[in-house]
Image (cartoon, rainbow, N blue to C red; front, top):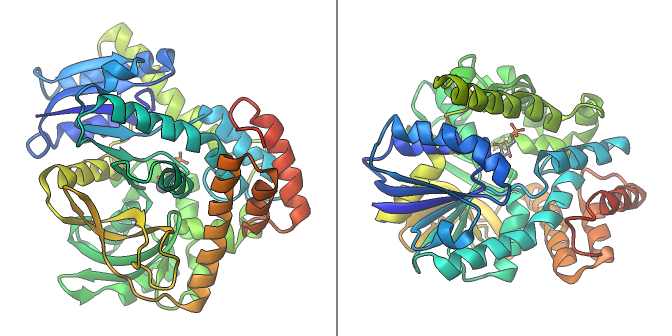
Length: 439
Ligand code: G6P
Ligand code: MN
């Protein structure tokens, strides 16, 4: 049985991940779960909920809650990482500062994502070092930390040999919806996909060898990438703002006559429509703080008082996916999943060193990417611009370069002019003074 540490233990995602682990104990046996966080108070609030989830399934799994890296990682076989540097207060800034300039305000896309990247790259490298110091030498870090594209590039530059697999639940959430549309379980789908994280396309969707793309596209053109029962299977991505996000795929379809775009492309391809419908005083960070966060914290208090745990956290693809990936790493299952890897030819007409999102077979030694071939000129061009923006952002972080940060902001498709880029960057420098390296 494995020792698993969750870095970012105080996240409101933790109970859902642990629930997913509990229903898969036969496939992924656990001796111990350790929660690790630098925010002790927050983690201590979440921990009793997590303990209850464990005890409902197992009396024997050891449960440890700590802020000490040595206690957290000593001898660990797996680390699930989900750090949010600056927490939701800083996500709020990432979203609101660009909106004040009429630019998309989003957690991982546009200036918000770049700002979040500047906060996260160096702490991520520190976390990797702590894990490498204490954990089992063959330990894997399965990393959900956002902004995943930039974090992956930062890790590639700073810790190229680390055993880290960067993942995102967006493609798999889209596949869950595709399965619902087609009336099959998402595990039955065999897909091809290429792109960068939060910036890519499904090119093929097969069920038992049969091409389902035409049927899917017909549904998406009418209803978006969505079915009515989405709320039951994945409550997080069924919030009203997520429903809007899944629907917004519709207007992009004409641009991509054969593929299905990742919903996140809407921020780059139709930024004006997005900004028009964003409230600069109340963004997604506010929704999450007032919704998901409050609900779970209230439930934790209620549970402490009454011993009854209200239904207050999300169990869905997010947790199921990281457990799938960990199983495949642990037992060399060679399952095919969409993950973030160094390109090395997987997308023939993108640079070898780009961190791309493609299907890969997950072995005990890591991912073996599938070759997606050459991508069309239009997609390649969009990808190259986004890649340049993200790589320049990483260089800005490592070199403390204001010029490169400004270039990264200017190249981002959500940002209309260099003047916008500069105004937003300068406000963000002030807002992030406790977190960013000096530029
Ligand atoms: C998806 C993405 C994550 C992102 C999340 C935001 O799951 O893959 O990268 O963090 O959505 O969701 P939220 O409910 O916090 O807005
Ligand atoms: Mn993601």
